[in-house]
Image (cartoon, rainbow, N blue to C red; front, side):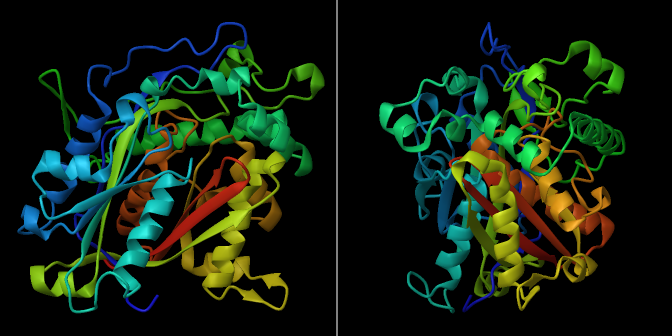
Length: 415
């Protein structure tokens, strides 16, 4: 980057993430439940989140906003709007707006796009204050994604990639096979994420990152506390959705990401904005990376992006990735647990202890995986964890449909 990109203090937050449905039953489909946000439109979710985060900025006024990037993986139906719609609704009249969709890394890609626009010198010069809000939003209960699991794809996609390459759960099973990941390991990760989220909720870790939202006259300002998950509960209630146990299936509803509604916002700016508005930086964006893999092993996109980030940041010598050296500085890794086998594959390949991973829980809990919001949510949680634990560097990453992966790294400025 030619210019550095910052997150101003207060400029990162999310709504309380609310589970909206159970995982699909192969015979009955999704079985959607009416969640907390059932009567709130996706636009309202995104707008309340963006407005709440902006209000945390010292001396904020609408004219400070330069642009709004909406990130959403299913921008159809009720979610068919752009960042400019959010800007208009909030009275940020000078802010342009667009839409970014790169499936599960839409939020991460939005962060990269905003950073490139701020630092690239094509649209703005270094003396001009630039402030861009990246607003990730996904109302999974509006998406009706059951067709994914019915494998009802277009003929072209089926012919080009094949069914196994498109059904995400099947690719995660194949990754488990390739890395010799057992069902028991997947279950243990889900139980660990459950225990960590329960602790984070009970000890108020999320208090600073959650933006209160008004729903039917009631203020929602905390995530749903998950019930305690045990091996006995998994054994009694598990169902194999993607591959039967008889055929070696390892993933169930407890070791897959939960369906959730939610929104998250991160505000990025340049040093000129910090100086003009008197803001203190919360964090500096170190960089971002994208990786690609065979679509049949979609979950391994997380590994490909991680490796590219190591190259970008100098943790690569000869043909060796210097992961141990990387972990000496990067103590917090927020990795999207789309399926338990996904982070486990990275952890196994590079012998990364689970103490680095998702210390406040992950997507197997009610935090879930509201697709277009997830990348921003990962970054928001990461920044607040860095501040809480006074760690200098952190990384947020995710696997992405059709054989991709993405990740971004930050340096904490509140030490």
